[in-house]
Image 1 (spheres, rainbow, N blue to C red):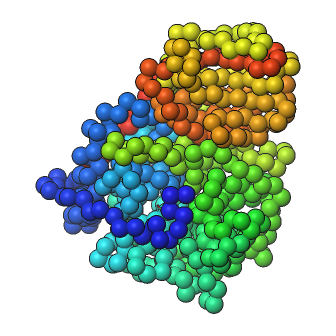
Image 2: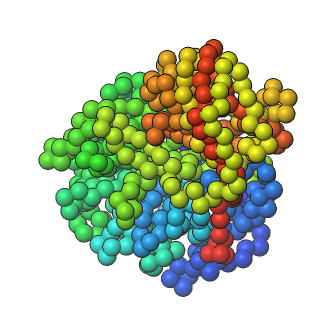
Image 3: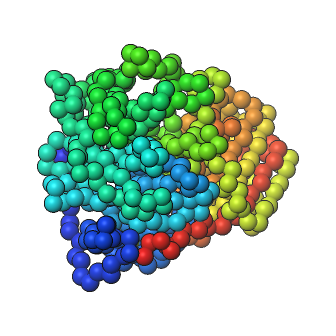
Length: 504
Ligand code: FRU
């Protein structure tokens, strides 16, 4: 990943030139202007026109008003709002100056950008506010935990809010709430990314890292809160060690109960992986039974939350690799509902509320293919589309769709399924979705990014689409044999709303 080594994390970052600053009303903390937040938000606002001028920027994947984002942080459902915080560089469209951006949504589709929530307290030696999580505090309001990075060992810090809208945040004066000393004689390297969960009326935290920087000891550590204010914590030891010795480190662990099992999501500097198994609370040990890659595409660094309907909502950082100078870089994946199926593996499906963005619909049915490709014409074309296709395979070695095809059909981005291997492939990225003579495919094309869901959530891939603005065609194909498209529906997708009303 971008910051696979500590050395890269501390690369010198360019300072932003400040100039005249309009003070946002939300940059005020307890009657005092917080200049760090005011400066950061002005820098973001200044980049908005550039970001909006880029017509290849996704329109219905979540993204900050402008500039850089990486991991989703502290996702939490509170008082009817889905809150999303995220790693954010307000000063450039590249990694650096880590703050926590903030947005909220009623439906996980349309968003309100909110004032930047957390900033590096430079006067306290803090240079970055790294990833972390949220959990209800003693008064029921969410509190945030994150890793504080400076020219010292990492520390886990607590931030609290003073309002039910969660607009303004203050750092707990007694920080850090956890330091490397908490581990006694054990040394945890690359120690970061707290994630919180409650079980049996108790509050727990897990963190990422490794127990030997030479490799082979990627591990997740477990802690329990020892007071209601969540300011005192007890170290319980490693709850999980990666069975694969080639995984040297774990970032952004998420550990939670789902459908009667326990799920561990980890970001081991390669695609996000899941482990599903049992958790012995008394021993503080997680025993995985199944394991897989969550999304083999351009995504990383998961975060989950549960809503009032009990749905487990997953977000991942969607890496767009946007060329520098565009005023924006990266998105979040579409919010996915995560479940554990009978076979012990996870399923991921896009939230149904995305249907509210559907515009004009076009459809086709019972289209026979035999070692050919059929363009779907001008009704099924565009760079912001949802498609749902059901294939029946009667001999073909592979079937699928090509999107963003050029007029002469020489260029396009292919989504292919092989019934023999059970793999869906997009670019070089492959997800196993089962060996079958049927394939059901959900495609969300959003300018330079695309998300694929196959066979009722058995596979999900976030990927990039490199196409020229005029390449808008779609075609279906079957290779080396016959197949039919039982049904294909396509909708043009409207942009999601991103309100800046509370970002001034
Ligand atoms: C994952 C990560 C985290 C860290 C954050 C810094 O992408 O490296 O481990 O907290 O990003 O931005």
